[in-house]
Length: 402
Image (cartoon, rainbow, N blue to C red; front, side, top):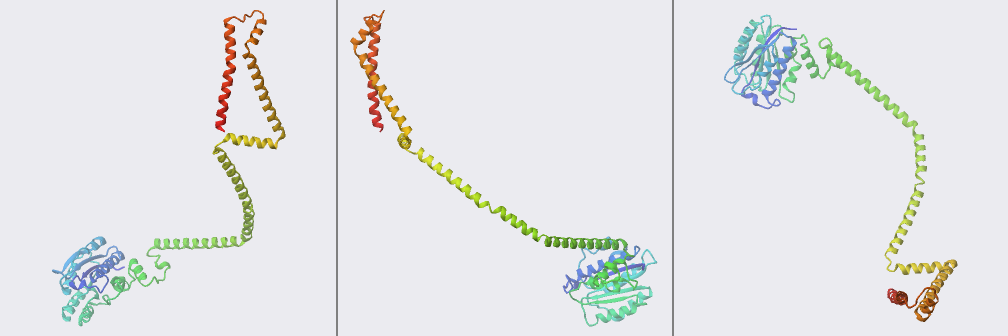
């Protein structure tokens, strides 16, 4: 792994507002810078990365070379877009920042993003390139955005002047649907000088290439053994789950094939059980009809205006049907007639005073002239008249009722 100190030069000129790179040029450039910073710091714990801007009021160093990735990413927020890009001044300030790096054993590298037209002549750029080569500074150029007539030639001349043993690189990224960071993943700027780069860079490059690699799951177990083991265990568990599901499905299919006769038997038994149901329903309906008829009869009897006449009619009908009952009724009528006749004769005898006086005189110890005896006889004579009057009163009332 190469030990490097890297300065990244960002183009934040007015040309970065264009939307030919999704979402805009400046945001696409910021995503690519974040990706490169992460790859550089993870390739070697002692690598350092710094960031500066080349437009605006002037060249401004946002963060000096540091290994703190959080500090590097935080400096990208809140950047203002405006002004013109000063490519020559940006490269010179980056070289000065690398010259004052803390670890002198680190190799020096500058990564420049050029998205606006280059206003410097080719000779000026070649002179800057020779100076960088003299100080052993490698240069990577990302050419995107504006494509004027002399821009490509100028940056190619700059690269040719600084290149030493193919340590410097240039990438031309045309506008299109692909993100700027996705294009840079597969380039030497991201992966390094042919040494394969870091595990982070290798994994990202493999993902960009469609996951094609010489290792299972696209991960080198030498670089990240824990991740490779976790992926392998997960794959084995998933394979076992699929096999168990397939086995269960086969068993259920076999059970269904064997269970077809039993299903037909169950259906026959169910039909036999269900068939008596209509008879039970008919019996229930018949009982309900009987109860309704009895209820209607009871209502009719309760609403009848003359219950006594109804009762007499029922008794006469019953007597006509039964001879014994008719004979009993006749005897009871005769007995009541005899009682009334005997009571009438008794009343007549009591009303005869001479007869009652002779009877009392024949009794020993009884004086017919005694006042108490006379009062008793008077009361006895008055009772038959009262009862006869009551009978006469009852008779008209019964006739009125009929």
